[in-house]
Each structure stands twice: as structure tokens, then as C-alpha cells.
Length: 176
Image (cartoon, rainbow, N blue to C red; front, top):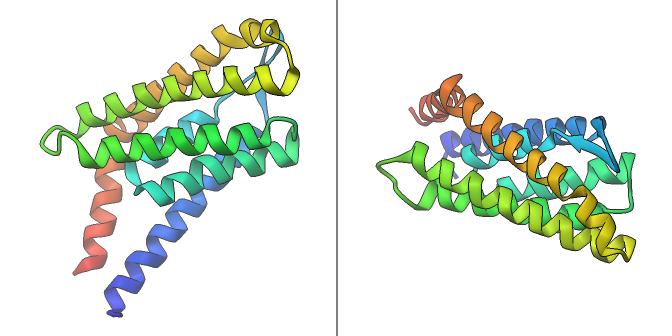
């Protein structure tokens, strides 16, 4: 293995670990809403998924959310693993594999599809965990808000605040 590839691997692993830590941290507190809390972990998940490959995105979204729930609210931790993991993988795949000449549009489509996956996954998961469809429906508007806020803030941080450019420059500089 070339030395430069090891640096890229180490850099990517470290980046994924930082995003996973952000996901766990943002899972530790929420904005109180009727019936529970609105969490901002989707911001880190969307941003990490746009930047990282699908496996790294799954680690950030799925494993990060799982660990955050395990530490702070264990009932839905497996729902979080599956839902946020799938959300992150889909965002990463769409962001990296479609519309290569329009990466911002691809990312926008990715986070939109990811938000839909998150809303449906949590609605079905809460119906199963709490055995009541009504409870899941009470939370539905807040799940939609969480998905939308995560998608929008993730896109703004990535493209308007220049994180995508910084990340690509960091990866490119390690190759030379």
C-alpha cells in the first residue's frame, strides 16, 4: 500500500469519526416539542453523507445515531441504526453517483430523499416500538421538521459555508 493512500484512509477515518461524534453529541439534547423532542443530529448526518462514501456515511448516520440513542434514549436505538443508516447511505450514493456535473443538485436530491426515508422509517419504527399508530402520528409533523431542518442546514453548511470545498482540497492535497 502506498504511503499517500494510508494518509487518505486515515484522514477519511478521522473525518468519519468526527462526524459520528457530532451525530452522537447532537443526539444528546433536543428541542422540546409536544410528545417528545426535535433532534438536530440530521444536520451532521446529511453533511457527513454528502462528503463521505456510503460506508463512511453509514457509520456516521447509523452507528452514530445508534450510539447516541444507546447512551441517552435506548428504546429506538435499532430504529435509528436502520433508518439513519439507510438515510446516510442513500444521500451518499445520490450525491456521488448521480449528476456528476451538478453536485449541488445531486446533494439536494439526496438530502430530500434522505429526509423522506427518515420520516417514514421513524414513523413505522415508532408504531412498532410503542405499539400505537396514534403516537407515531402525533410525532409526524416534528419528524418532518427534523428531516427538513437537517437537510437544509446540511446543504447550507456543505455548499454555502464552503465545507465541501475545504474537504475536497484536504483530500486532494493528501494525494500529492
